[in-house]
Amino acid sequence: MPESELSTSDKILKTAVALIEEKGFHAVTMKEIATTVGVSEMTVFRHFSSKKGILEVAIEKCSFIPTLREFETQLTWELEHDLLLLCEIYQKIMHTNRSIILILMQERAMLSDENRQGLPPYHLKEFITKYFKEMQAKDKIVTENIDALTLAFMMMNFGYFYSKTTLSKDFINVSDETYIDVCVQLFVKSLKI
Image (cartoon, rainbow, N blue to C red; front, side, top):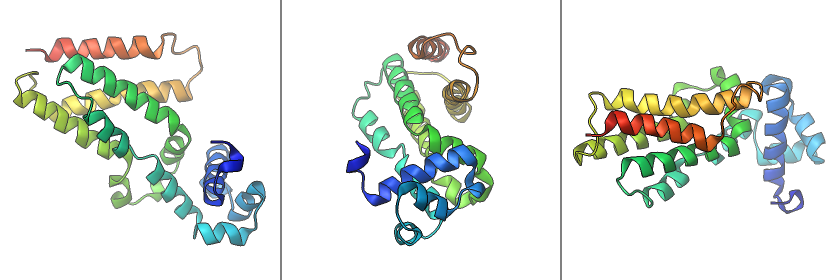
């Protein structure tokens, strides 16, 4: 959506996230956000009570839940197809929400345990665990430990995203498609009955 079509709240949110990603949460002020957006500081406070409030809204907007619901409708209960689709969706979501995810990693100490439970990785973990349990109940996979399997799948995906985002471009010299395909093949071969 073009900048001119964004609501004032969305302009404030987009600007705040960019400034916080660049300078860090504590270095950015509400006044700086207002000046950059081109509104008064009072306008920023009318939309968001605090910087933490801005961050909370940004977290809510990067939820995995709607995308996971859409994914559920595309499940075939064929392991390779479903894992390929889930990896593609995961990487797309992470790329789209890159800025807020990096901010959350930098500023994780300011979140309470209760707030952390609402973060996208918790929803994703719950979803993947449920999927693997259902696949096991359908006798489509064999595994001793669903929780460990879920974490391995998540870390494989997160590690790739993190490496692409934070390391030099020459560190990863394969395409997303190749990486995802190789990883899914490893999972499929190890879990097939």
